[in-house]
Image 1 (cartoon, rainbow, N blue to C red):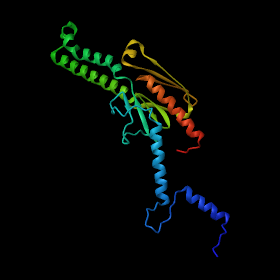
Image 2 (image 1 turned 180 degrees about the vertical axis):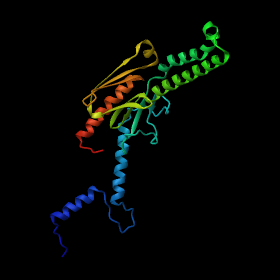
Image 3 (image 1 turned 30 degrees about the vertical axis):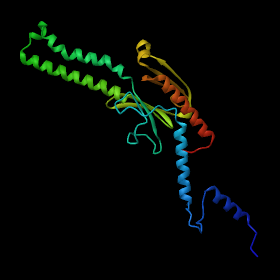
Image 4 (image 1 turned 180 degrees about the horizontal axis):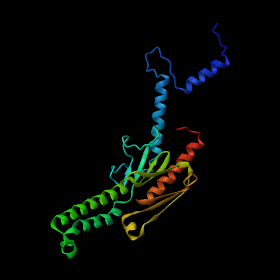
Length: 247
C-alpha cells in the first residue's frame, strides 16, 4: 500500500518547488526548467516591467557634448556611481547660454588689429608689439578654455536612485551634492525670460529632505519635462520602498 502520509516539511518543500517553477525531468522527454533558469526568467520579466514603467522618459538622444543627454550607454559613468545604478539623464546649461562669451572671444580675437592704430601700442618697438600680441592670444585661449570647462563640467546627473549636482569651480576644485529620489519633496521650474521661453530652457528648482535642501539646475533644456520626470521618478522610488524592494 502506498504511503499517503505527508509531513509538514514535505508540504512546505512542495510549495517552494512550485513557487520556484522547478519542473522535474519528464519521462516523455519534455523541456526541463531548472531553478536557476526560472530565476533568470523572473529577472528578465522584472527588467521588462521596469522598462515599461519608465515609458515617461523621452527617447534616447544626445551625446557627451550635448546640453541634454538621455539614456547614455553603459560606458558613460561617473566616479561615485554604484554598480547597479543607471544614468537616465545628464543635463548642462542650454547651448545658447554660451553665445555671449563666444561673441566676446570673437571681438577679442580681432582686437590686436584695431589696437595698432592707437599711439600707445605703436610707440613700442616691433618686437615688443609682437610679444604683446602673443600674450594677448594666450590670454584669450585661456579665457576660452576656462569658459568651455565651466560649461562642460557644470552638470546635473539624474539616475534611477538619486540626483547629483556637480559645480565646477576651477581645475582643482569642484563641489558635488546629491540626494536620493525619495528625499525629493517638491519640484518646480521657470523659463528664463523671453529667450528662454522661445528656445525652451530655464531653471529647475528641487526641494529635498536631504543634507542639501535645495538644488537649482540653471538654464537646462526643456525644464518642464525635466521637472515632470523627477516627479515621476520620485513617485516610482516611493512605491518601490513601500513594496520593500531592495536595490
